[in-house]
Amino acid sequence: MNNTYHIPVLLSETIDMLAIQPNGIYVDCTFGGGGHSAAILKHLNAEGRLFAFDQDADAFQNFPHDARMVFVPENFRHIQRFLKLHGVFQVDGILADLGVSSHQFNEASRGFSIRFDGPLDMRMDGRSELTAEKIIATYSEHQLHKLFEKYGEVTNAKTLAKHIVQYRQHTSVSNVAQFKAALAEMVKGNPNKYFAQVFQALRIEVNDELGALNDLLLQLPTILKTSGRAAFITFHSLEDRLVKNYFKGTTVEDENPFISTPKKQEFELISKKPIVPSENEIKMAFLGTATTA
Picture 1 (spheres, rainbow, N blue to C red):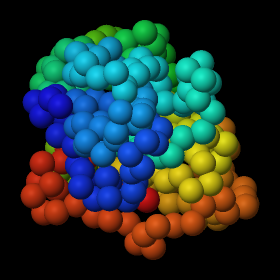
Picture 2: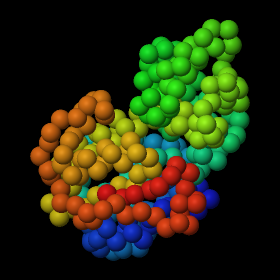
Picture 3: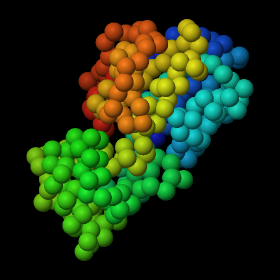
């Protein structure tokens, strides 16, 4: 476990909710610093197995030498495919700690944080072609408008999109400092909060975060055993809404996460209310309140 890479939130609460079987098969969809995985391993015997997914190549440096573990360097949206490759068709539990890791935020070269200057990248998977810089340079005014409105809930999303399109006609934007300078006159309210919303929107789009989460949720009925459990830690309202609606059985998100259709309830909620972190954990978090469903 590497605490300098990422501090696992709701650790004991999540492990309790998983009700780990010593000889069971589990999946950590977001390995990161390995904190949650390390806690799961403590509850497994020699026959237990743990599959750790992480699309960020940096995460592999935290992978322990443990015969019970398999590291899968892919996005968790491909969970069923890669479990099958390892001869696994159903598991006893799944954990997904969504959002961005502390490491990704603290590495200026990744471009995730408004605190540091660096390239407008924001890719969790360096193999992906889409970057925040490319979005700013190529997306239409309409695309940018909807992006900031839906994924960042930016109050002046429409005028911001128009401003960016006009600005890029005479000035290129390739790093965080340039981008913040370009948006300076558009800021509404608290600058840090405003930029955080804009950066969140770009990051979600770059990594197709809601699309990946939706893909994972839709595979749960197939890959979870009848008595299996799933725990999700969410960090913003869009993730939270998607997960809550899915487990409540009220809606299922299709290709567009903002269009929903009725679905049959597949799961029983273990906790009727979301479990929230302690005040200390909230202070340590980067993206607001984490909850499990």
